[in-house]
Structure formats: structure tokens, C-alpha cells
Image (tube, rainbow, N blue to C red; front, side):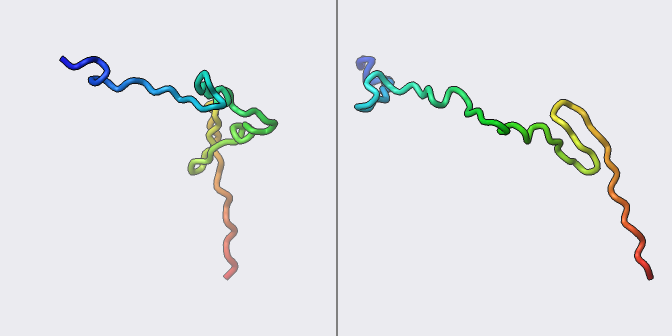
Length: 71
């Protein structure tokens, strides 16, 4: 039977000269927060004649009436 090292791939350690203990990716753990970054989430999505808000509200809107053309 072959030894265990040749049967399975061994995990590789990601390491560079500036990260001797390995890379942990701490800069990607928290989202970047800045004022106004989530303001678009307060706006509704329009689907046909309805406005759908993220909190579940749905508001029916009437399409604007077009004036009759003068003949």
C-alpha cells in the first residue's frame, strides 16, 4: 500500500515574506461602511404599476393619464 502522502493532496499554506504566519484575510471580514452606502435600500422597486419596498409594503400607483390629442 502506498503511503498516505501520495494518495491524498496535502493542504498548501499560503505564505509570503510579509506574512510568515499565513494569510487570514482580515481586511475582507467586515464590510466597508460609509455614510449613505445603503440609501438605495430605502427606495422601492417598481414592477408594473406597483412600488415594492424591502419591508414588504406594496403601493399601487396609477399610470399617468395621457391627454387626448386635439384633432
